[in-house]
Image 1 (cartoon, rainbow, N blue to C red):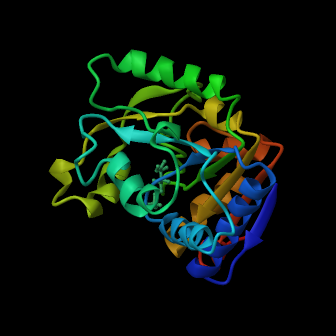
Image 2 (image 1 turned 90 degrees about the vertical axis):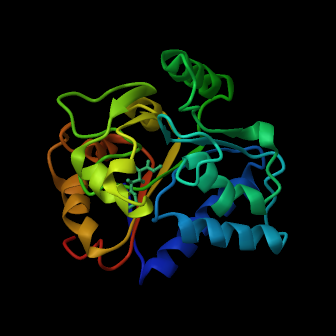
Length: 241
Ligand code: F6R
């Protein structure tokens, strides 16, 4: 496990983008696992810049997102599909057929979950997974639980997550209560993982995830067992370390 302490959010994002760019340069047909939320926005901006500079190309890259709200279609400004297009995909040369995000509007959501796992396996797994972390220690939308949920599944979002994510919506009522997420095993099967965190609000969760008991009540704690995981933290998120 590596811990990189960045000066600030900008530096954290630049370091993350550089590591992702190195992955793409060394393996142009990399499979990237991607996250949404506030944390990776600047990382995506730096990757777009590296694409515009012609340092990297996404022409053979495949992406697989961690999660999606249930009930929001692609055109909904709060769907993760919309987020990814708006913050990243619309500005790079990725092929639409190489983008994968669970469909939270499908009738048969169980099938969406099992098809997602099959798709990941057919792509030979994820080379590099980018993660954010919830205030409650969730990764993807694997919320604190009594056991680690293995594969892609539907979940009920925690009250805390609904509250935290309501900042993107008009009000808390509008936040979907359910989502589809990769499971903990799906995430742990990625060959490399980078977890990003910034801000003092994440400091205690980061400390416990790195040094606390491995416990499904704090899903990110399982990352202690991953053979190639890097935490890139700004000063504030790292202040308890
Ligand atoms: C998003 C995701 C979540 C977020 C986490 C942190 O795809 O899987 O685990 O990474 O909720 O969100 P932000 O970055 O908004 O603090």
